[in-house]
Each structure stands twice: as C-alpha cells, then as structure tokens.
Image 1 (cartoon, rainbow, N blue to C red):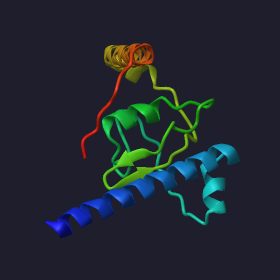
Image 2 (image 1 turned 120 degrees about the horizontal axis):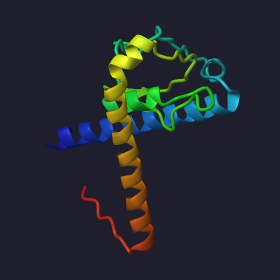
Image 3 (image 1 turned 135 degrees about the vertical axis):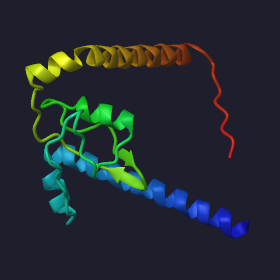
Amino acid sequence: MKQRVVGDFKREKARQAAQQRAAELLKAARVAGSLEAAAAEENLVIEKTDWFSRERFDPKLLLRPNDRDEVFSLSEAHRFPEAPLAVDGGFVVCELLEARPPSEEVFAKEREATRRRLMAQKQAQLWQAWLEDRRAKANVEILQEL
C-alpha cells in the first residue's frame, strides 16, 4: 500500500509541475507575442496542427470537449487560452494562428446547434457569475478532504 501511495503522490507532483511549467510557457508566449518565440527562448520544439474545424477536429490534440470550446472561442484579439489545456497525461499550450469563417453551407446546416451551444455557454457563464456573487456575499468555508 505504501508503494501505491508514494506512486500516486509522485504522479500528482509531476502533474502539478507539468501544469506549472505549461502555465509559465503560456505567460512567456503572451509577453513575447507568440508561442514560437517563447518556445525558442526555452529551446522547446513546437508542433503546429493542420487547419481544423468543429466538424473535422485534429486527432492529435486529444482535447476534452470543454477545452475544444475554449479553443474555438479564441480570436485575433485573444489568441491564447486562459490556462494550459489538459490532455490525456499532460497539458497543451496553444496559440491561434488563423481563423477561417465557416462556409455559408456549413453555417446554415449548423445554425441551430451553434445557437444551442452558445446559449449553454452563456447560461454557464451566468451561473458562474451568480455563484461568485453569492460566495462574495456569504461566509462560505470550503473543506477539502485528502
């Protein structure tokens, strides 16, 4: 049992270190203005994906659905995500290089699904804002178990 606990502890510390390192790289990329420049300063190799869309997502990224939503919310004014994106076994630091608008045919076909997705995102944002407001006005203690 001791070996299992020690192994779990080491994996968790390694995950935390990887997340911190990815966050540092993301911050450096914002300061440098590009991920490529920040990676070059750290002697890191970056990998660029092919162009992808919601219908044809890049299979190498292995992003969770919430992270996919964050990737597709990036814009020319906001080229980097808020935090590194979690993938199976690690973290991804990314930058939007180019955005292409959907074709009219695809847009017409996906209009209702897009409307529902945007409505769900707005509802989630409203819920989070309400929760944060309630927490700010209340005396809440959050107890975390080990």
